[in-house]
Length: 416
Ligand SMILES: Nc1ncnc2c1ncn2[C@@H]1O[C@H](COP(=O)(O)OP(=O)(O)OP(=O)(O)O)[C@@H](O)[C@H]1O
Ligand SMILES: [Mg+2]
Image 1 (cartoon, rainbow, N blue to C red):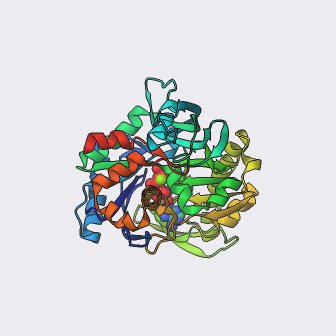
Image 2 (image 1 turned 60 degrees about the vertical axis):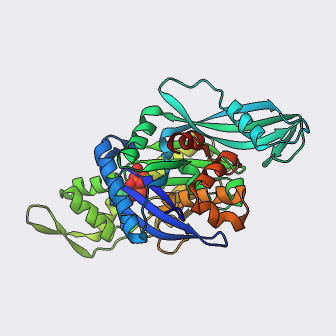
Image 3 (image 1 turned 135 degrees about the vertical axis):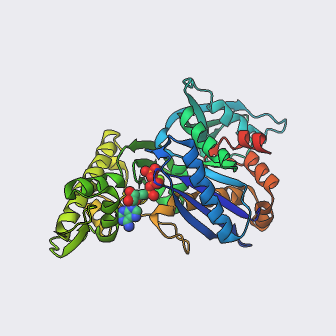
């Protein structure tokens, strides 16, 4: 199994799983991908550990069958919406006699930045370094190897409710799976559907799922805002169900089959199943008006959030990912008209995984492989991926501006 990297994205409607394989040139191939229905979460939070772990088990079994491997270790995302960012600074004296900055100094300065007051119901789940400062010289991305007396870091410390992350971890371990490491969802998404230049110019990522919409903003290359709204694709289905007086499950089928934001005034008649062994006809136009109304509301809330936080003028465009809105035909023009910005739909650019619903899960694999590439020579990558203990060491070494430095170290101590 150690030739492969397995990612899990546990959402409110589905558990998504993917297996990535890295070839000799360092390119990732997605060799297995699957989605399993899961009703153990409400608004991205685990409310039923047993049913979540059953869905995780099934998802992993599907991947094992697809790729013909045994899976015991996975990488997971921590849900974006439940995390909060706190800016802090860390300062340390460079330890070595020759005053060359070593990995150990970087680890120490990041630990120093984590020294904030953490409420008793929360925990630090990671840290995103924005810039390092060596003897007063700022904007340093990679300080290792530089000479200096004093190393500082400006960073965003990422905190989350302990209960939420622990229940997520419990669901995975109850499925008999070890967590190799955690990736912050915002980081996983941002790296797979945008360029570093776009993140420098300012960009917002809107992950519209079934029950929540997560918003994250990058400015000057750095993650600077993360927020959540309790709205998603299920609200659209619910509206259809209520307006047409049909069961939720029928409304979901109609939404997926006919939902289209590019068609206006289409009075084609479609047949709908009322759930009482009865069929009636409605105009397609009516269905799409219901969908449009809720999409517009969700997008207006997104805009309000951006404005409230004074980020609206600072972003040049938005990327929509997730299944909630991104899969409607015509969504980018529709969203662009409401938001007054360029909008694109973010999908992973990998064969067999090119759907906005897979952005997070493929993003996990991409993030992990990038982390390895930065820590190692590309030639060694295949070996590194083949060997879990090497992966462990990589994460102990690795700190990079574009990567989320999570609780990987603690996990490694726990699991190996
Ligand atoms: N073809 C489609 N057209 C429109 N909506 C779709 C389509 N396929 C799936 N959806 C909707 O996408 C939503 C699921 O999206 P996604 O899988 O991103 O959510 P999730 O990650 O499980 O949940 P969350 O992110 O809210 O925790 C559902 O509301 C579903 O109805
Ligand atoms: Mg999701």
